Each structure stands twice: as C-alpha cells, then as structure tokens.
Length: 101
Image (cartoon, rainbow, N blue to C red; front, side, top):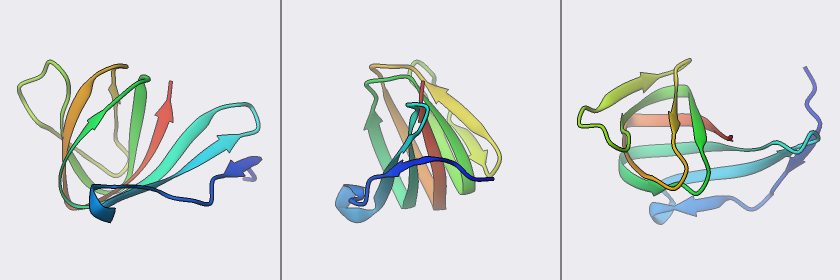
C-alpha cells in the first residue's frame, strides 16, 4: 500500500533522547507521529485529542481522571482527551503511532 504525504526530517526529541518521533503529514491533511520510547516513565501534555496505537513493545498508561494503570501491547490502542496530562511507563520499550483527532 502506498501512502502519499510528507515526513519531517528533523525528529521531535524528548526526555534527553529517550522518546523520539517524526511528524507525518498525509496528502488528505491528516497529521500523525511515528515514535519510539525507551524504557522509562514519562508525563505528556496534550493540546489535541490523541489516539495512540502501540505497534511494538508495551506501554502502561495512567489516563486523566483514572486511578488504575492500564497496559497496552502491540495491536492495542487508547485515546487521550485534548488539553490533558497523562503518564506512561515503557518497558522494555514502546513503538507507537499517534493520531491527532
């Protein structure tokens, strides 16, 4: 399958290089990021609603308003509300795609 679009060459680098992503702009205007997290614990802020698809590895997530952590593995996804904060634990790593909804 061929997908038309543009990829930003410069990576988005967070947490001293332990989390990186590349922004992809599809021909239809959709924007997403392809990312990788090394083992660790991280906190993210959202401006837009996001859907995270785990493509490899494992990510344990504490979503806004929740008290229980949920673990997601390859083939699973979760959504995060706009203008919120969420926490994640990657072990041993997490490869992901983030869609901006």
